[in-house]
Amino acid sequence: MTRAELIKQIQAKKTFLCVGLDPDVDKIPQFLLEEEDPIFEFNRQIVDATADYCVAFKPNTAFYEAYGLSGMTSLEKTIKYIKQEYPNHFLIADAKRGDIGNTSSMYAKAFFKRLHADAITVAPYMGSDSVKPFLQFEGKWAIVLGLTSNEGATDFQLDEGKVEPLYQHVLRTSSQWGTTENMMYVIGATKAQQFDDVRRIIPNHFLLVPGVGAQGGSLAEVCKHGLIKNDIGLLINSSRAIIYASNGEDFAAAAAKEAKKVADEMKAYF
Image 1 (cartoon, helix red, strand yellow):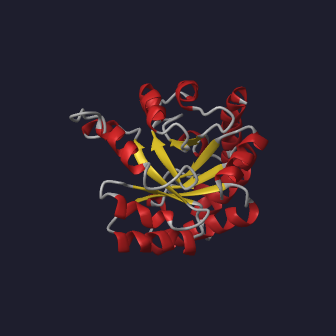
Image 2: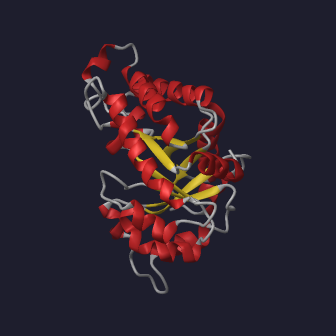
């Protein structure tokens, strides 16, 4: 999916919500365990219920890898279902990969060629040769970890270096590896006070923003400091607050209600 196509969907639907698909068999409604593939069935119903209110889905691969081959089969089925039924939705594989060049190339082939994801989250710690292989696929995106929403982000990312905090150095350097057409950044909603600095360094890149909802991030603050006029430039991810809104038979309807609530709040920014 190109940047122009993504923006078109955002503008047409008046939402920039991304729904995270993080299935945990201990949390999904227990009646689904009777299904042949409980994880896929949970995802399918969540996707169907929330598709009208979002422009992107983001399966976190850890929640599939934890169940071995069956979990990876569920992931592949989920992505295939989204691509077939909702081809205009942006599909992010939240895999946080990043290794030496030839290994990253194989990761890129796995997620872009085998699974047909539109984007993959990548870790830039090993430098340019660990990220650039993901940028070689037309219409695909690398979403680089910039400033994350977890508490441990303060261990390194906000450390004051000789000139600037490490996360700012990461943004400034890595932005030269790709373009605004094939590279996004993960910037956590819980770090809203840093969004002005982020936009000073990367004013036009799309940002994938986790942390709104269960982690306590503010949509209003993120938009105030991070939104790009006309293009929006944000994908706000919400996972647990939506997909686990209920663990009863009404789980899909409850997810739809929560997704609509967020989407309705987003309409004010168009």
